[in-house]
Length: 318
Figure 1: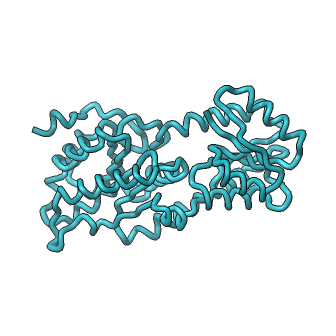
Figure 2 (figure 1 turned 120 degrees about the vertical axis):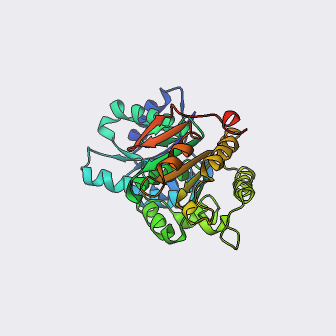
């Protein structure tokens, strides 16, 4: 059931939209707002899954109200309602600021339900590289940092919008750039970090003082993250490992196939998702072949695929 708040200043249009929504068994209207201030207040009090916002409301317009709603509340998805079909430039702008899209009120009878049905599917699914992710441990193979970011940035943003805990393991030098890219997608990163929904972990947290790595230290880190996320009420955790950190380990990368097999076993017992990103230009082909076997799904050339060479952890770990 998708819980929806309607924010529209014209009573007749609100009645039409409510009638459309109530014709669908999986949609439930939890409230109606007549201006932008009411929309922000009711979004905080009613905690809807989706807010339908008229772009031109009194007191606070739809875009201003959306920014306040997304800043204060992690979970709602927002659809902007407009009087007529709008320009492609406006559509790009509202999506950049965090909306799921625009629906013209003149086409609501034809378009509103299909758009909301897609939100239902997306809300229940985790997406990576444009496809629904079915496994819990996936490798992203790319040829550049730009290619990696094109796959993982939407995955991180979706997790924050769905109310998941998101934990990127990243080079500290790349932190500011990641934050900037997420802000460009309309996300309030300061608030997400303040409530510990987004927890960016620097690579150095995995190392011992002498530059070596203790595997138990890594597993304990993920275990603590998962337990703390569950205790804080996050339904799921998304762990994103930018695996270039392993190139800095004193012992080299030969440990990675066994390490990934252990991680695969760890994630199989959870409802969480771990992604491991490898730049193919930085790792030996033998290492890539070894780590690939511990991922049920892989992203290759920007597409999510079932991994036919996958070896389950009970077979990989002897």
